[in-house]
Image (tube, rainbow, N blue to C red; front, side, top):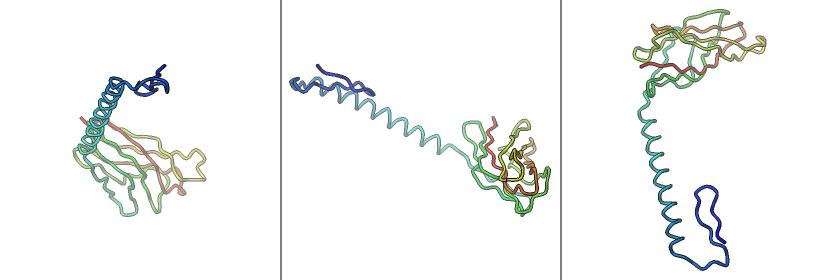
Length: 155
C-alpha cells in the first residue's frame, strides 16, 4: 500500500507495488509546481531587498559614532545597531541626525540596552525628533554604547 510524503504529499509506492508512470508523473508535477513557487518567492525577496534605500546617520560630534544599518523599505525606516561614545557624559545628548526624507512624522524612540556593568538595569534611550535630531541617553559615565532597534512609519 502506497503512502504519502509529509511535506509535499508525494506518493511513495510500497516495495511490492508495480511501477506506475502516472504516479511518477503526478509526483513530478507536484515537485515542479513547488520549485516554481520557490523560485518566485526568491525573486520577490531579491526584489524587496533591491527596493531598500540605505541612508547614513550623521554624527554632529566626532566623539560619537553609529555602527549598524539604517534604511527605508516599504514605507518604514529601520535603524538597527549601536550608538557609541568614547567619552560619554551622564544624561541626554543630541549627537546624531537622520537626513531629510527619512525622518519620522512624530517623535519616536526606544529604551535600549547599554554596555554598562554598573547600571544594573542597563537601560539607555534613543529618541528621534521630527526634525531628524537623534538624542541619546547614557545612564552612567560607564555606558559607552547604546544598542537599539527602531522601526517607524515614514509614508
